[in-house]
Length: 77
Image (tube, rainbow, N blue to C red; front, top):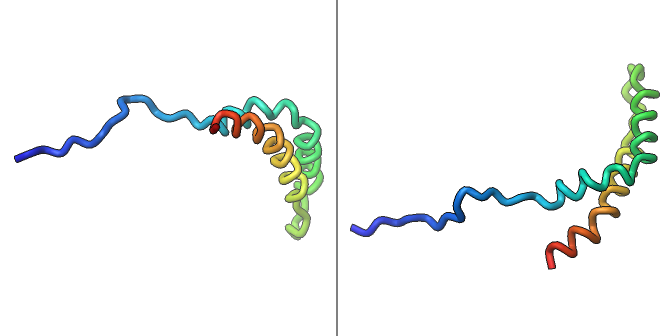
């Protein structure tokens, strides 16, 4: 009988370039991060759970995405 051997690329795991680029871009987005952290601290004691920091959170990640996008798409070409 013939045995089937699945194709293997060895022991090399693919590296997520986006994660690496996000980590290297975080220092460029300090201001939105500080605003988000200040908001989190400000609402820590909110028992009603009506207050949130969603806007500041998305502002922070938008900054990172804008810094990552050109570098990421250059690697994908």
